[in-house]
Length: 312
Image (cartoon, rainbow, N blue to C red; front, side, top):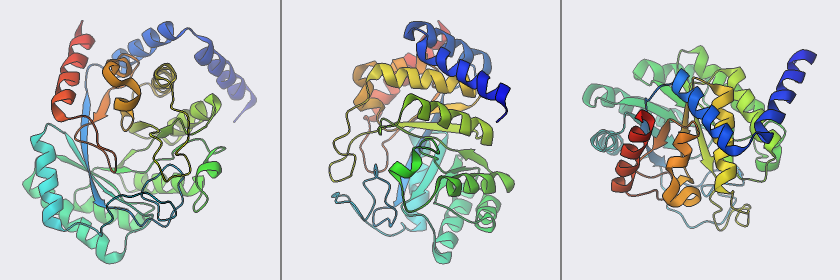
């Protein structure tokens, strides 16, 4: 990064952190209106292989190194995955994500996912996404050829803070997988988790990294401390800090989808609309991986509230 660029980023950082929250929200909402408009991105995910993960991500209930009582099962069959895609379509999702625990797929698992994607493309009018770990470029090409549209691979946090959260793989490995997905022509969904003990600078650095690698969609998760994980005693992030983070990501990333995922119900409770006035324009519906989300009726009410406030 050049000296002038470093100075510009530093000056922008100070502005983002020192601007009164109400003003920052108005600014972020205007950026969303200008670059995105009123399009709300809705997606649903399937936990297609759960638990027994050999990685040590401190936030994750699915790591075999932690002691969390969650369902653990091998890769679901093609029939179950296709039925889940049909259900996602039925509840109003535009995208359906196939998610597996672990950092790799075996050849047989890759083949099974490939077949499921192909059948979904034939039978279900829904965009297919996947989050399957650190796949090789050749494996990503196979999935794209089967009909995969977007690959999800979070960078989780800043490069500086990453080793404090994960030791079994590196930040650069995450970025390399993102670049491989882009090289085969897939869209990329990549974001992370806030509230893990990172600094404001870490959050801003994460946003600039995502801008640099030019991802298409950014899921922002807000940590839900899970008993049995190393972060079980983490202090909950305040709603105001979550709102400021969303504003910062919108202002830096401008025309990208910013999707509020896990934690929105726990942090915002009855004020989830705040996130969508602060620049967010996407959400998961129908629950998460190991954490239950809001019921669908509550999500539908929120969606109508978002559409209404955006058009006022």
